[in-house]
Amino acid sequence: MGYCTLDDLISDFGKDEITKLSARARPPSGQLDPAVVEKAINDATNEINMYFEARNLLPLASVPPVLVRIASDISRYYLYTNPAADHPVTLRYNTRSAQLTKVANGTLSLGLNAEGEPVDPKGTVEFQAGDNMFSRPGGGLW
Image: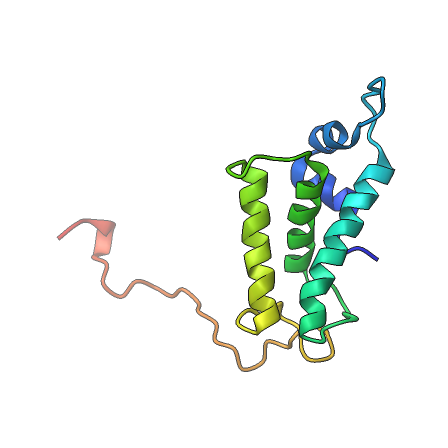
């Protein structure tokens, strides 16, 4: 089971890009190749699992939305053929790898408890905007 799907990739990056990146048939067919996309998703999932195994987080009881986004970015990276080091997809991949490193060393949380379920936000702080106490009647400046 992957952490993202073909539909997630299309939602995040558009059908045209995913089709272009996955269409590797010769001669070019211009058609989306689900097998190529599935391989990229599996490669991304396997990479993510390496980080999670270090923290004994597997198997996850649920997949938080942030993990779907991380998996989408990594899967997209795997769909590219040798992107340059300064290419935006490579930079996003490096950012996601750094985040996964922080999850693995315990300095960043996916919002899951020890059982891999979403953490209940009880006891967390919430901010709510109120009325401005210092405004003048009529909204004018001093």
